[in-house]
Length: 76
Length: 133
Image (cartoon, rainbow over all chains, first blue to last red; front, side, top):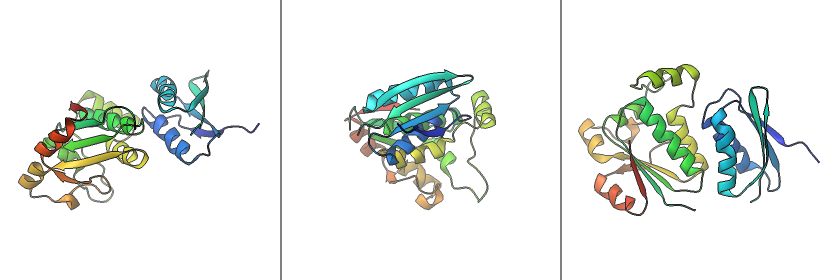
């Protein structure tokens, strides 16, 4: 199992991490997993909400020190 | 596309309201909604093309200062991202452009899809959700 591609959006404020993740999802292959790192508290809730709305798969959200790691799988 | 199209009338020149419009427009556009933005009144001033090296000139208060200090994503860049990643159209109010004697070349590049009158915009907005800032 390969490691998910990582997008480091720490230091960016809402909706920056979401927009960076969406740009990466656009060019990802279906089935690929991406990990977004964000220090923005709102994004830790907004990103899983966006994933659910548009129909990708939210694998996990994990708080690590002062940032969040959110893993998403591109479904379509 | 799911959800009602979102129509945003942006007429305030305040940075805080322009930022909110940009956040709603960009997030809406990437969330499978069509978004249409109509820029009028003092808001158009924030979209005036500036000399090279000069960023947008925003009028604003407390939150504007903090957002600029912290490097929150720039409103104009958010609108551009919304266009790039979703279905977002931006129209400049034809009345405001007329009274300023401006054409589209006077506004920032790669953002506006044309000019439109309020009557036409409101007519289209009957099909969706209208927000005014």
